[in-house]
Length: 330
Image (cartoon, rainbow, N blue to C red; front, side, top):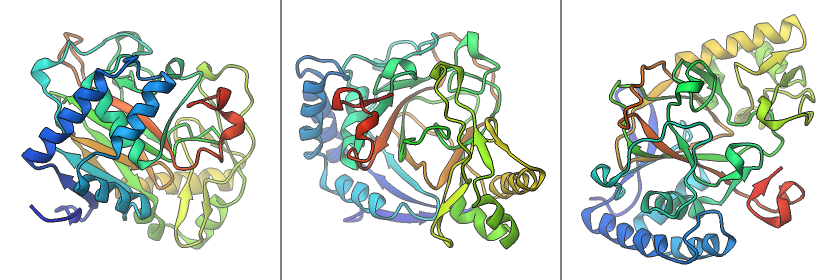
């Protein structure tokens, strides 16, 4: 095992910052998560428990801390951090949930692992109108949501920036696999760092203008998030991306054509992440769009199950949106 985090290239040419825990590191992480899971009040969303988790996260294995810090500094071409061999044991898990708005309020060991790693990257946040503001959310197929463009659906999920409509969308998304998919379905990801060279200067110029709007889902109520915005912003050669190909619309034909070509470019550079139990991946939500292929769940307790956390890098920036200065945003 190498002494530090490594960047590897797959056969498809995609590179990711990766770390595989050694057995000793996995055992250390398991003990840390078990102690945290039994820490009062045992509730993931309680401020006292979050504070304890933040402190405990500093005791994660040093190689893992180095990998997280390296990723925070520069997430790489594909905007991904992949962590393997985290201590998640499938045999000890309950059946995969099948209800809408599924979350993990209790401080289970997998929930503790999600929080420990996420809190070393930044601050974990949630949104009041999304899954009741829970910090650790379950990504599972739900019978009532089969045809929806949501984490509970099983139809193909279009490429999107997470919460693209929101002015304080997550900087990073963490996905911890508790139970892998039997059907082979994974998470599609595509980085603007790879897609940008495939666009013309004219299309890039259009995408950098406020000629697009993104609708919020019905769960966010009557709040108006429809202010026109660019799809690409920031550095000319290394822009951020903000788009949801289900919810983002162009205000004119030129914008619509550029948006279509962006979608084609992203699709041409996409890769698939088929997470296994104990694998966790972080996506840089400023650089990466993600989606999912269609699949047929069984709803028998053995379907794909991920924990999801949202991370902000600067909690001061979103202060006016955080309820009582806590972790939940309006």
